[in-house]
Length: 101
Length: 477
Image (cartoon, rainbow over all chains, first blue to last red; front, side, top):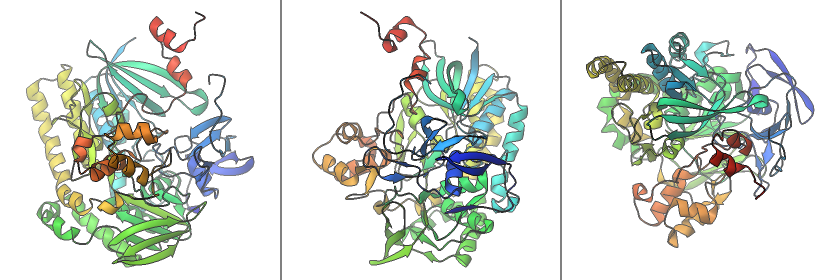
């Protein structure tokens, strides 16, 4: 469990996590927003279906992969929240997308 | 296409110092960094801290501001949110650097050309492969420090830190100052190690880190239960971490936890340097690989340099000096200053480097992680991505597997998205141990571009020759 220090100064940023509204703060990464919203896990692994969540927070481990605005497999710790951002947790492997992003 | 004088990768202390000095020598300089703001991990969030109380992070952190201001004024170009995933040295001695940059909805891929490249991509935390380390609720200690630095977020509930090394104590003290509670610190420094390290104490007594380090440890010890000489550690839980089971003097104990923060030192990021063809060498004391570099950061690939912790762990202040020395070498190589000017300017930075690295032997000896925490056994996962166990690698090694690349082909270890960053050192050491060989001889994974997973469309977007187009476009014949 994680909490935000009461004296932090950063603007509110409205986002949704799995469809549920959440107020993150400017400068939060997606992974930070997930953790402070009470979610330790954000995906399951393609190999055994084990739960995983943010681990290194610096772009190395890829455990914080989430779907952001319909783009799967995004590294939550490298992307900063933006107003209206839609974050979804992932289960298992992603399907290959037909179009080039 | 205009050609840059120097492309620099990484905006931590080495990259910021190098870019500033390169630009001051009238070299056209671009600095590429994966994060949204400058500072690297050590000064993460330095340009936009949300913290109301600067004392939480301490003076050593705020020193990072002194690197950002001159960098901003220097004229060097700064490209944040940019992943450098390929660096190719061409026949004419220049480099083609492939970069994917921009916010998630507008990522674009480009190639820049540069006469010299400085890699300043720093370090990552050393793998800490114990049973249950993949469970949600288990973090590297540096990860929780990043949450504090960038978002003012701290752990709540039952928090335990485990491992060894200066960062473990620093994170503990910062969390305490921020108001977090810590249930225990499980110190894995082996019994007798302090006595070995004391042989190097005279150097450490003169180090700027000595007084501060001693104060950190004392502060934490006054407020937190510190359990020393922990010889084994496992995380309990099924879908999240709920307990830590550990042994001291043959007795097993357990603690209920909400979070476990692990740390046993940091190791150089070798992926870019290795894939670019730089020779790597095993450092036995630091138990890791690092690129082979000369006194100026020059690698075995002409024109390609490594500055800072990426060339061997020495800390943030040494990284700053290393960045400046490398910048002088590049300015000399590209004809901006002659050899004697380079030498004159280098003296100050060499002194800074010597001062910053005093006592490094003491720290490296004291905090070299115990074998038990580098050589896991049984079901313990060593490859987090492909979920490969220690036993699988040990069995392969015993049946004659030639090395990490063959292990990768047989077991898929190192084949996932992290590209071996969390299992590479463990695989090398497990094979070396099982076959009674030297890790230097066993070697590391063969590193290849792209060094980060990128969509195929972004690779295809780079194709510029007809041969390259044929390689990615299906033709009707």
